[in-house]
Image (cartoon, rainbow, N blue to C red; front, side, top):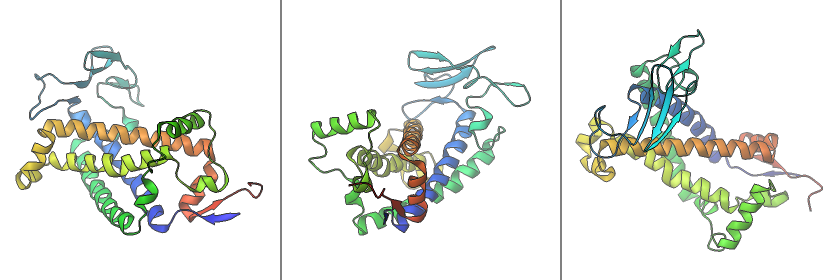
Length: 263
């Protein structure tokens, strides 16, 4: 049986958001390559203590978070390009836009797709509230009960996904993930990005104060982006495990197939 699942605004925003976020993440990694250190507070430069840094020694790449130091040779810090040349940059060529080191071009990509994300996201938020779609994304009190949450966690850990008509509704873990991304991570990423802009600093100085300084805003921006990347990875994994053809088709056409033998 074929049923309608995703409405047109949801599908349009999903694919627009997917393209924009991937370009933003990859161009953001190139921007991060220019100064692969993160700080808390209003100021930060090479002599200042950073809470996160990716750097290269003469022979290896290193990721340091606080007191934790991990060797990341070949992936982060020091890696080999397609021509066999050893490069001392935080992120490798295959993870960045552009693939060669170019800070100015990366910023152009980043700002252009940031506008796309912000405009599309604002329109989607307005539609979500106006159409009451937001109610479908927010978990109810019963769903947040510890026993209910634990049952959902166990079911997902055992790869027992909802079937039939139950698959047409968001479960509580989906609601928490989608609502957290839509109403917390994306706004945090947009606002912290604006707080790093000198023009916005002059126009809205309170925005910088909201994050406790430009360097804190940069850290929040990076953390939000990392959490969104983690959400995307888990989302793609769940799509693959629960039936990719049906899931992708429903997000393209809006139609979802329920097996005829499903009670």
